[in-house]
Length: 255
Image 1 (cartoon, rainbow, N blue to C red):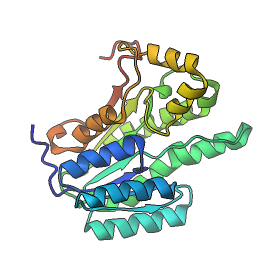
Image 2 (image 1 turned 90 degrees about the vertical axis):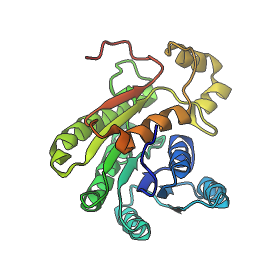
Image 3 (image 1 turned 135 degrees about the vertical axis):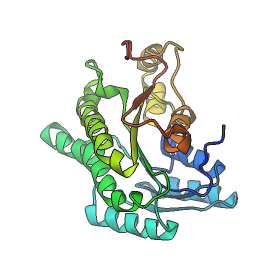
């Protein structure tokens, strides 16, 4: 299938590793122009070196997405370098260390507000883009009532993100901007959360694997493949969809 992504311009937040990096790997393979950001400079530089050695057009900068001005500056500079914007993949998340009410505030900043901030920055350009699309990375935690204690706030914010995105899809249809979400289940990647769990709590890791009908974790590439399709003109009549990439972990009938 030809996804018709050749030459398209995309911003992928949180692209240094995991799902974000896998998305950029796919976009690079489709001959797209990409800009990304990440908080960790070392992993970002490693990924940029890999992409640039392959002769691809990927730029990146270390940015804290909760720093509103720094984030806005990077975003505007990136769009100017790209010469416009066709696709936004809003992917950033992080593990919050704070406790109590501060944890709720920090999770709100990272797992909801920064997605909205990216959207507001992107919309003026997407309205002039070529077959524009937005894809948010949510989580099956948004619909689970038995999340781990460390994911209560995370799941709540991801639920709010799903609501926000589906309402946005209805609003932006008049501009031919498609808005979708991908909700991964547990994903194992190098230096990721579940790799740490596997090393320190193997029993918990196995229980998490068992929620999938395949009895395994998903991979970043499996999620990225869904994001790449939803970003592409091949999905031109798909909007307001929350696509679960979870190996059948959520046991519900979806009409």
